[in-house]
Image (cartoon, rainbow, N blue to C red; front, side, top):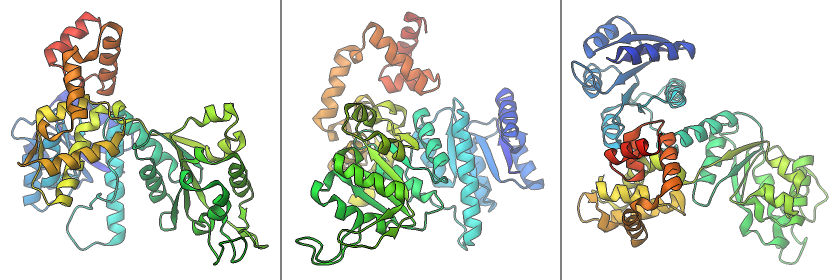
Length: 443
């Protein structure tokens, strides 16, 4: 049973954490200061340290620094009600394994703990000689908001199974990244991952793309070709934008999935296939089935489990973290010393609706990084689409009135699990205004 050291001076919250961890099969020891924590560490071994940022004798970062000086490499998770990315980034640079924001979200805490324990097991198996915390840079950052936690939970749940997965979401939300993550977390992770854009396949050559062909089977077939099904055999086949397939090609696909056999064009030889199928679409396939443009039997074959990726406008509590992540990547790529985003620029990013989702945010952050002449991204570095939208929001009191305004506030509070300060930041209003609105609407 994993053993966790809790360092939290709030007695009520400490006890709540203790009971929560025990219910989820963790052995936890409570302490209330850095002094008590160090005494426990001298006499016991722990798998993870869960520490508050604000402590009576010093702060959590000081405890982390002490542990580093003592060469104690226990994974350290910081808990902070101030949940600003700068504190989290500072903690990670010092050596924290992760952080958890308050108000406390149980699902987030469990995911963080499971991820750390899983990383430790992988490190032990690989017998790494370097005394470093394993890097997750190859993994995609999913965010820490409620919608993001739910998304990651679904991915972690379905990945180890053999179920066919249908990923839905708008353009730019990261559907292919989700598919690759499912593959990476599956028991086929070391086998082929083949991605195919169904929207880019001409109708008349889809059979060749899927199943391959033999030389001379049709005009232009000057060599044998292996199709994507055979290329992905034993691994994972990802069919992106599957809703763009013609009805005739849907029939071909259905037959291959049902029979688990394919026959290259011009060949008499059948090939057995063993693949994990993941499909993605930005269309409403249920509506396409109702309209008769997508086969219902194929829909059920590819949709044994569905994963819906929320739009970025539905994950506004994650925009700050995503912005800093993309800034770090852009600065490294462009060889620029840009490390900060101004408050005004960040508010503009949060208030914008992001029709292009994460892809659009990444592109704008890269552009702003290039334009920045200092060490931070100022609002002047952002394009007119974002700044003009921000001005329109401000001039119309965020464009919210009566029931529309009430709903936006309710949604923001739900997003932040009742954190009024964070909800106010998401909406771009002051804390005082937020409290006034809550009173006005009897929330």
